[in-house]
Length: 143
Image 1: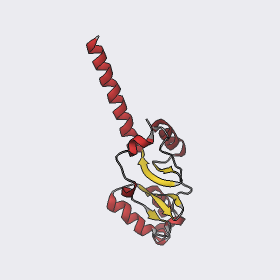
Image 2: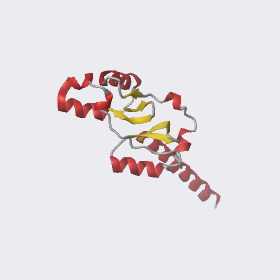
Image 3: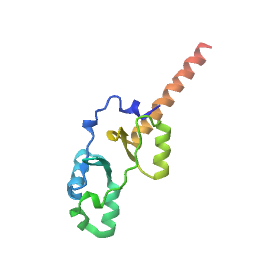
Image 4: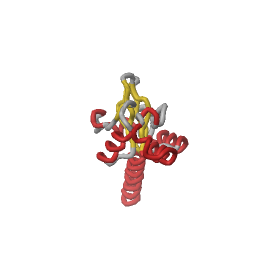
């Protein structure tokens, strides 16, 4: 299954994002307010990086609360590790595992068209396994 299938019923307008100039404090408030773990950092020419709760934790451990007044650009993970709509779920899972990330911006023609999490991929795989199991049960019952 391709990532495009996961994005079929989603709008890119629903993706929560921030800019590189936003303060870490404002970005953290946005993450907390939306109860999400990460968001893409957007600029005039596309995705600049990904800002996640991990980025904040690492900076807090290094320098304490002073990091909250820094711009997101100084804390975000950059460059962003991305996928395309044509990337398969298995390829995206392997990439997340290899690069140790939990969120990926989806880029088509140089522009953000979605944002996926490891949870999205796991849900997709569980649905696939359940469908296969149901097909097997039906086959066995009809044999």
